[in-house]
Length: 235
Image 1: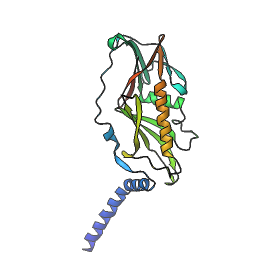
Image 2: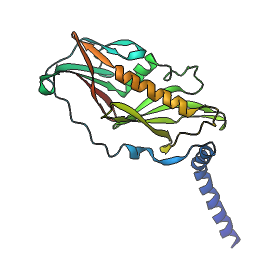
Image 3: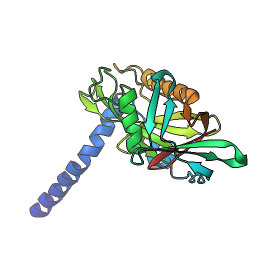
Image 4: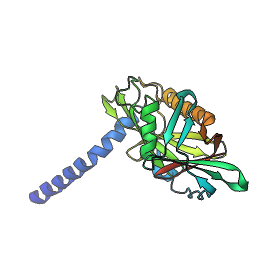
């Protein structure tokens, strides 16, 4: 009886140790105002892949200039590992430009043009941002020091593409695959204001986005996002 009791106790302790790393972070997050909202991946699984854009008489420009609004203009060469650009006649014969960015290309562009993707950012809220594409959206992972937790965590800002409005929409914060609501402003770091600022800057850039190639200037018409690429259809 005593031996069986010790064995049961050992099994219970082992189970507790296995669960502890996952339970403790969730309890700590709840304590500072994060509230779980479900599984993050559930936001993206029902999205159908967008149809492939077919161009007639396509040409590959040697160089294009992408206008990023307040973040300035950037010249690109076709570099398939990062960026790929094609110009041709689209639906109805309308001249169309298709710009495809790989995940690596987007992260390279983010490091070049913003501070959020820099590991040496002086912004105390977010640094070392990384973009992880999802069907119809993206997770933007950032390193954040939370004084109340006494540690740095790496949440992801969850964004989804809203095709009718041509805007990204903030959906919550992902931590270890769980979607959380934005914590209250009682935290020393005002997550809500910081995320609103990021969402606004992204959408302002989208509204001002332009592509110049071969003497033509194109504006965003639609976007297609997969696990691997962001494709902009511009007319």
